[in-house]
Length: 528
Image (tube, rainbow, N blue to C red; front, side):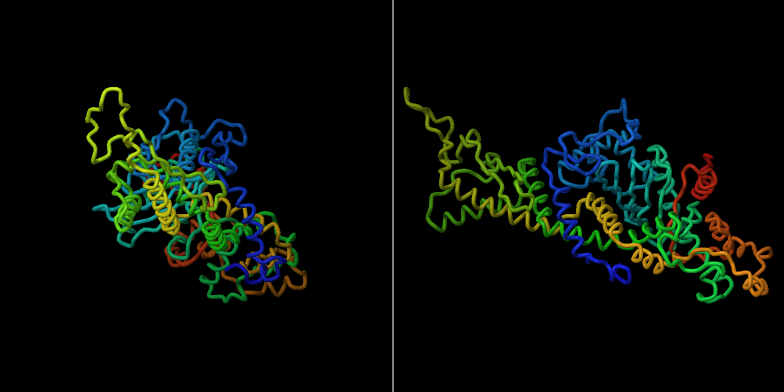
């Protein structure tokens, strides 16, 4: 939870701020099936705008056959969202990525087997899935986020089973990721090294901590090397904790905000998901999907078949005439549509019957001759008005019940993550400087360097500090250059020092040193 210090003094509670945010979300997230989202997340008939800078799309898909829904299905790639969202995403895919889905999946996963799910809106693409090892067994899971607008990507999550950690699966996956990023014009890949093995592994791959993350990490590493306690070595002798937020550099302020957003993301996202369900949007999406699927296949959906059987049973108990059509005949003749007027999932489906498909009741011979001059009877009327009412009522109730059940199981749409970032930005901006400073202090990121007192210089000079010229590892730890983490990782004590640490950083795809290290570690020749 993020309401420890700064948020305790906030003028508005998180719940109150979310009420404001939810009002905005209803405006942003309300949509119509015929209106896909544009680059800013709005639903428009055009399906999205051009790049913000007017430049040529990064995908370079000109001249290539546009991808279709069946291409993703064939590649065993699941598209996130309902049909309208999927159509909008496919349009954006063809514009920005311009690659056959099967080819993209193979390249992105480094030739590994597994499944993939993609989604997103505007210039954002979210990719997640599972990696399969021998025998098709799942050995790893991953989540990747790509922002084509900022030319950045994020390795949000990657975990391998212990049985696969000694294989080349991780290296193949990362190599495929980076090659794909480069084709898309991505320039950097962000990562949050976790407290398991990530603190060590990402450094080996060529990732570099942000400056503030390195400042915090190297203080921890120095304590491990020198045996000093936190009170003596956590702060540079020539640094003090800032009294004002403005005393921190803009880079440090950005790092504090970014870390706060990472730490609070799950809570904001959980609230948005709950709002998605409480507002009825999940039910509305479920109804859209059920209506879209109805009539798409030869087999009768279970819920629809059960509803027809229930009508027959009730009519039998009441002594009413039997319905002279099979369930399949009824299914083929029923037109079911769903139009959302309120967006809260409370609208009912529209159910009608196509009389042209009711010309052959099961107990009537369609070839039976008629007498000359006598108009042949309209056999579709064998499905009486009361029968139609009974079927419509039962089908409507079953449809709504099916939507209620499906809504509870539906995954939250990926665009909620984009909304979360907006709400976090709004919340952060609403905090005053003293609250932000308290957050920085809690993270250990509020230190600033000061000029030493002349009277204190002499005693400090007399302190017996480790000789960095005889200990290259300590020298690396005490260096202000974040790339020094590579020297730490490559040292005999590197794994011991970095395992269990947590830091944020990135892989700069434009930096020759970083890429030479990455390519060497994944077994690829340097492209620098």
